[in-house]
Image (cartoon, rainbow, N blue to C red; front, top):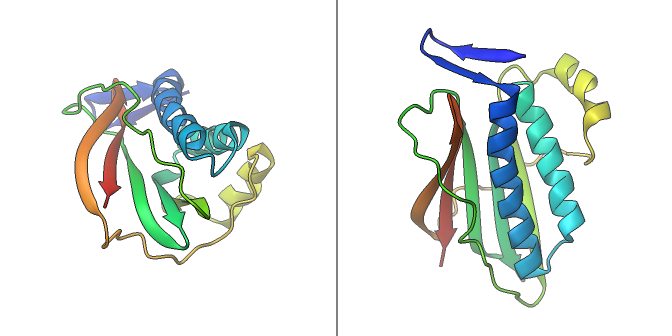
Length: 164
């Protein structure tokens, strides 16, 4: 299966898999350092993110570390299907602290193509029971910092980090 953006940007399922391995590596590192979720749960999240990306349904992934309900750190991954200007980065730089009463909140946003029919088709392939969310993802109490890009051919994810 291949996807094409305009006539000059092409990527394959293998390109999505390469990028998603890096995203999943970040999720697992965060799980390991915070102890807020298990590494297995982080891998389940990564699996579902990859499945959604392969079908063209994924738009963004927003992961937030909360302690006593207050945002402490966050990462946002944004899908790019025209990633010619992006440079490949290695996963990492996400050693987050262990905090009291901490939790990790993950929110996915989808493309317009992810309608009810698509949900019905893809839900048997997902490991997590994703539910609608209306949380504020502006991270207004945090400061954005350096970005990393994960890219393979025309497919990429831009990672934006947020911290206190």
